Image 1 (cartoon, rainbow, N blue to C red):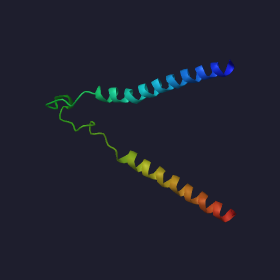
Image 2: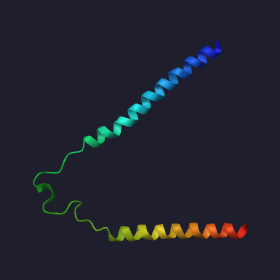
Image 3: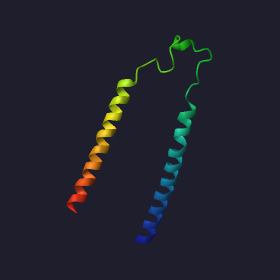
Image 4: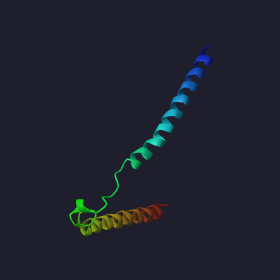
Length: 85
């Protein structure tokens, strides 16, 4: 009797899991398709480039610096592990 109840519960859980997976698969496609297109004449930008002409120089230098520091730490830890062995 208990095995039958467990089997029924597992079938329900499996069915719910399949439904949730299908829903999560299709939701991103609906949000991507809901984005508006570009204006035909570009009048909303007032002549500015797309993105508003924001400078990205400082942010990219910070990102590159952090990536170099992270890579250096990884190399340091690898060398430290090899010396301990």
